[in-house]
Length: 333
Ligand SMILES: [Zn+2]
Image (cartoon, rainbow, N blue to C red; front, side, top):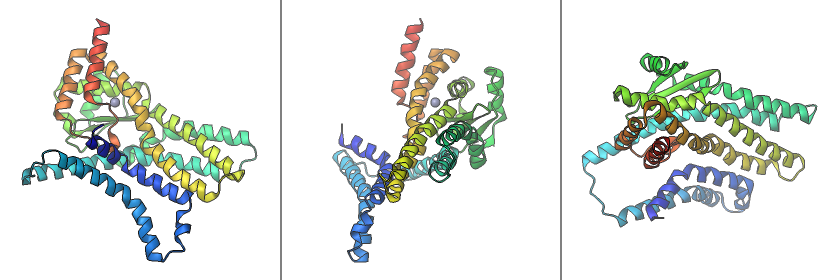
């Protein structure tokens, strides 16, 4: 692995590293060890522990950059970089509103239920947890739509209806110059977000983009992801709550563990699972629109793709996606 790859992958997980460090600091009660020290020194040390990973990653990135030819940035490249930065920031905010906040909101009642609510029997509690795991994710698409508040695209909604004979509750446009689409659905409410840049595609390519999303809709991928995540997370929380009642862990230690687990579960876990569905969505779409047309679409995406924001990069590298579609085409013929 090259140095810049290491630096970039560390950079991608920087927020998780920091959240984990905060969790560990609470778990091991590090501030209490520092209390003996003068206040400003302990504060300095604590900040140091948090800033260290950021500094280290930046140092690695700088070393990696200096090993390769550095082109002196012109005002044009700076302008472009800044523009790209704003765009990526916009997509990150979109992802926060569309996925992360709704997933946090549906997870909070479970935390309350598991750690705070007292129930007459364990079976009643387990039944209630299961009900919440199945019912709460039904709310995420609605919550997501309210938070993002996208402009509806009647044109794209009609394409779903007429070309695929499939009814979606909304297709919303989001501000971005990157070609991309995202599904948020539950069996009772189905939504698709499409970036505004995707509207510049010709009809064939729009069909390719939407056919891929059609798979996620038909197979209830986001609902499945949310319920699986909630189920797994509830199990971990139940174990933590049991350890708390058995006095294997203290309240502080449980809080220290919940922080990184919660963050991981709303940010990374669904994305990791999503990758499993991506390949299937590509094959499904290619078989609907035709393999060659779909391969051309992926090639076009590759030409216009920029390094996507870390938070929403659910798709595997495009080269891999193209290869798999070519393999499927060979198998079919
Ligand atoms: Zn997809």
